[in-house]
Length: 94
View (cartoon, rainbow, N blue to C red):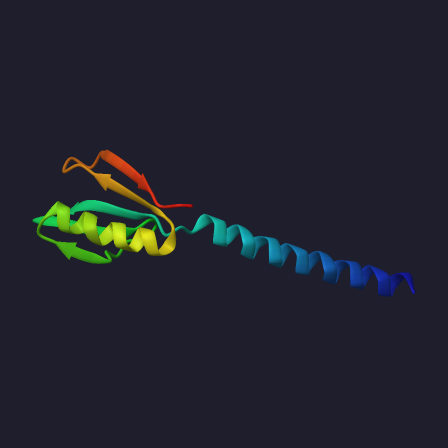
């Protein structure tokens, strides 16, 4: 009987680890949008992504696109300078 309980306890522990790891992965991934210099213009890139979401000739156009995405997902817009440093951060989180 005690052997059955130990297997049940192990199963419960494994399930808890799995659920907790899924929850922490969701917290680690955000919808924050970065406006970054890209080739001869600007790009919008989701935080943590290597690929760009959209490319733009003007920074102002990229900012507009990033703001619309950030509003939709209640995230932040991080605007970078041409040198790569952060110029401004706008939050649309409620």
